Amino acid sequence: MGLRIWETDPEAEPKPRQSFANDLVGRFRSGYQVNGRPASLEKWRVTTGDPEVANEVRQLFGGDKPQQWETQGEDNLEVFTDSPKVKIVLDGPTAIRQEMVLWGRSGAIRRCDGMEQTGVDKDDDAKGRPCECPASYADRKAAAKKGTGCTPSTTLYFTLADAPELGKFRFNSGSWSLVRDIVTAEARLAEIDGPAVAYLGLEVVEFEAGGQKRIFTKPVVDVLGPLKDTEPPF
Image 1: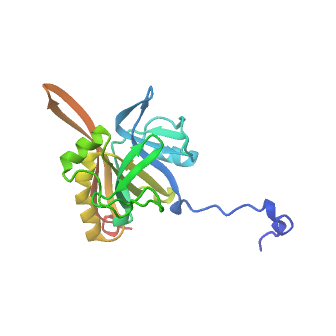
Image 2: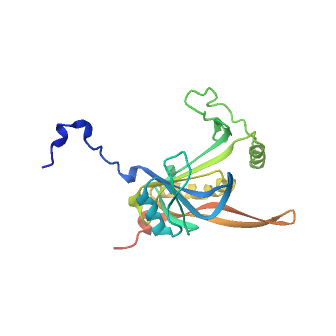
Image 3: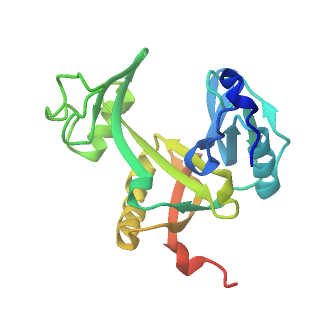
């Protein structure tokens, strides 16, 4: 039988701890800030507000010790890992969410799905109106670069295949290459229609432009198969 001391002091009763399985415990990031300017990474950076999660991430993926970083969010610890690719579990097709957003200094100016506006909030009168962005992929990118068109926002929600008990992580990207590549992953998830194992990676791409060698890092998602088919035998 449990103690009844909280019946005499209900205000002091500890609140039930929410399960990590239902909470967002951290974010995977493909970049960071250097002197206020964005810089890309070739290995994953993970941020969290939980020291236990930070230490476990380092144990799993190597890298530097968790350290504090300046942020307005609750994920004030960061780990620069040694891993360019991690194995994750996606719950199904809804684990990937996409939208197009035109950002202003104070937030979203316009949101759409590429065809219709979805509204910046529930009271936005523009909701349901045709998208104001150009029709072609190339023109969309050009408009986004000029600041007149929406940019992609792709978000993944997942658990770590080797430590699912930690809870859910999130990765968000504005990568145009991911918009193209994610189509294959979405189709595979729709086919599986359930929990699936995948690799979330950072791939280095080299190319020449104007006689100069250019390098950039792009995020990739490679769905391996249903979770039950990839679990080790017991």
